Each structure stands twice: as structure tokens, then as C-alpha cells.
Length: 600
Image 1: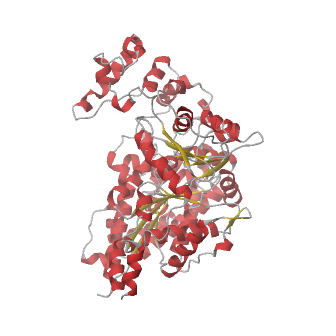
Image 2: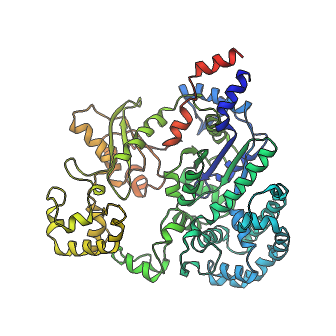
Image 3: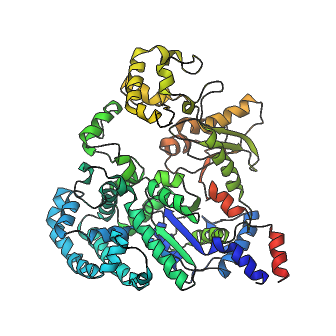
């Protein structure tokens, strides 16, 4: 074995199999990214061709970093196979009787569109596509039903024909739903995905059906069978296996692949809200209301009941009951917000020039090169600081959500670190328990109110009864004070939270320990600043706020987008968390690698 083969073998575990899951809001560019990855002639732009709003996208040392990763990307570019979740949903649709599919559509669309359904199903060529689909019995048994396993005969499965039928049906159905059924493609396919997660199949009125836990991973299992098939075939042909999943919008589906594949990277594609909405309106003719409904559905929130949308917060529980809501809905619905939060790599895709993908291509070159060859370049300043914020959030004792924040000067020099947690000297929520509260434990751990208010203690006791069996399995029965107090008051009130916000904590650390001024500095947060923290950032003269969470509520529109010196908001782009180490930690010192290759 010569030294070139030695290096290739050492890198082989990273470069022979790559699995990417794309996630992002509708219109952000996941399908565009998938199409670029699947192209055999993907061209990466030169540095001077990468601009955003007339300004160079890469500046300073990042310009040199890009030159290095681009050179590697050009020499080692191979196309990805793309698995579209929408097409797997189409496969499930083709498994239905036409009458069942019609009933399902009726449960999703408005009643005034029912009269068009016969024509829609006819134009979609449902019967013809289904006949062709069911002729591929072996393929359906393995890929859809999972009733067969990979064996020596599996290499004969005609996956190309199987996908061709599904793809053609999907495109015809999408077109007819767009033209004849009020652009209802997204809502029908989102509903079908939710139905599969809840019941393992597509059913009308699926939210009234009993939750089947296995359904949560029904689509991931279909994808996994395809992955295994592709890897099996490529090993026979001595090829590398590169696969992109388009598009993951449920965090538990993402977790399925995170737990099974070390080579899996969840990649979020992000666009500015204004550009994304304009793109959807111009290309797909979505109305403002349709985009709002899609965004709400993808935000992890229970879809609003417009008849009741003006009800007060104290009526929320009653609305959930009357609308058929149950706790499992939170597991099955799309939650792009959470998917973005847990993403390994965040990519920015400007939508202001729909035909210009140079910024997107450049970032693909960057991260594909690092996936295949870790340590080619060092992290960007954005990545370095956000990784510290990401690490800091693990210190949070909040049982609802962990957030980290870092404040730097304008040169990315760190001035303070914070995370959401209780004030110093108090015990965080994850270290307290309902059992201790019931037994009148320490007066330094539980407040006077918690120990003496009868109404509060009654509700806390009821909560303990509900989950007491979990304690017998070794779990600490921690509780959220705010949630119990809101039940006492019968209203939602964020004031009752025990924790300081991460951004707030980072600001206070500077004041507490006599730090330097931070006017003109930067705030990094693993979430996004709320209205209160946004006001504090504005008052302190923060120049830039770099955030991950793309759903900042009124903080941007009301608090920040006003006045003469508003902070600039930048959605984070780069690798974070486990991927930060996977991509930037070299296999061996680069000097040693070059030395081995030179002495070949």
C-alpha cells in the first residue's frame, strides 16, 4: 500500500458514505439544494462571483478559506442520490383505494372545493399510476411495506422504475392541486405526513384516530430501507454512497437518523422571511394567508382554529379540547423551528436573485469538502463564537429549553457568556422535584410561596399523582413553576418564569464583574432575542445580533426595526455542536498528511 492509499483509507470512513438531511421552511430552498447536490456537473463559483446585495459574501480570512475548500470540492465532487419525502408520501397515497384518498382530501380542504375532486383525481391519473405502481410487487414489498429484507435477489429491484412512477404521479398531482384545488398541495401533503406519523397510514380525520407510536418513525423506516438498498448496490459496484433527504420537517425523524448514522448531518437551509415570501408568491402564486398558514403549521404550533382565534389565553385549554387536540399532536406535526435548532450545519440561501445560486453553491463547497476531509480550514469567527454559546447552553437548568448567549466586541473578542438559568444562589428547576416539594423540603430550594400556598400545592400534588410512577424508574420528577402557576391563575403569563434569559444573563455578567463597555459589539444567541432582551441589546448599543432560531416574534418588527441605530440581525450560518468538531478536527496534523503524501 502506497501512502496515497493510506490517506485515502484513513479518510474513507468519512468520504465513502455521506447522509445529509435537509430542513428549512417552505420556500427557503431545500429542493433547490437537493437539485444542486444531485447534479453531476455542479460548478462552484470563484470568490469574486459570490456577492450578496452588491457586497462580497466572504471577507477577510474567509476569502482564503473558501479558495482552499473550493479547490478540494472541485477535485472531489460526486453527485448525491436524493430521497424526497414527498415522493414517499406519494407512494403511500398510491397504496390507498381511490375512495379513501378522496375522503382524506375532503378532510383537509374546504367544503366548497369538494365538487372539483372527481376532476382532480382524473387529471392526476391516479388509477393509471396506481396500476403501474402495484405491478412492481417486489419493490413495494420492500420499500413501502417492509415485508421483505435485503438479499442476493435485491440487486434486481427496479428502483429507477419505481421512483419514476412515483415522481411522475407526484408532479401531475402537484400541478392539478395547484391549478384546480386552490394551491392545496402543501396542506394535503403536510396532512398526509401527519397522518402517517399518527396512525402509520393516510386516513381521513386522522387526528381523531388513536395514536400509534410506531407511526412516528414510519417514514424514516422507509427512507432507511432505501439507504440500505443504495449502500448495498454501491458496495457491489464499488462506488461511494452519497444521499440527501429532501426535506425533514419533524425533529423526531431527524433524531432517528442522528441516532443511527455517524455520517448523518442535519443541514438547515435558511432565507430571509421577506425574500422567501416573495419567492413563494412569485413562483408558486401562494397568497399571503396561505404562506401564513404554512409558516404556522411548520412552527411546531397547533394549527389555529380561525373561528376561535380571538379567544383569550385563559381559554387555550378549552380550545384544545373542543378542537380535538391531544398531547400527541405535538409529536406528529411539522416543527421546522425545532429542526433548525438541532441542525448540525446552517446554510444561508438568499432568495433575492432566484436564478443566482452562487452563495448557496459556495457554502455547499465549504461543507462538503470538510465532511469529506475534516480540518482543511479553521472555523469562521461566527462559528467559533456560536460554538461557545452552544456549549454554554448545556449549563442551563431549565427543563423547558436550554439557550446560550455570548457577547463580544466588534472583533469577536469574547466579553461575557450566559445561559438561561435561575439567579445565583437559587436551585435550578432540573435539580428540584415534586416529591421534595410534597415533603416540605429545604426552604432554600423551594420558595415561601411554593411551600405555603394551598392552591399551588394542590395543583402540584395533582401533577405528582399523574407522573409518580416515573419516579420508580429512576427519573427526577422536576417541574416547571411557570406551568403550575399558570394553571393556578388560569392564564398564560411569561412573568412567572424563574430563569433569567441567556442574553440577559450575559449582559449582567459584564455589569457584575466590572467588564468593559460593549457598545458596537455583537450578541450571539442559540435562540433569538425576545422582546425584552432585544430592548436591552438596543439600549446597550449592540451592533449585530447573530441568532439561530428564525422565529423571533415581534422582536424584529417592533423592537429592533425602529430608531436611528438599530442592530443588524444576522441568522447564523455555519457548523455548530457535534458537527463543529467533526468538520474542523483534522484526522492527523495537516503537516503529517502532506509529509506522508510527499514521501509516497
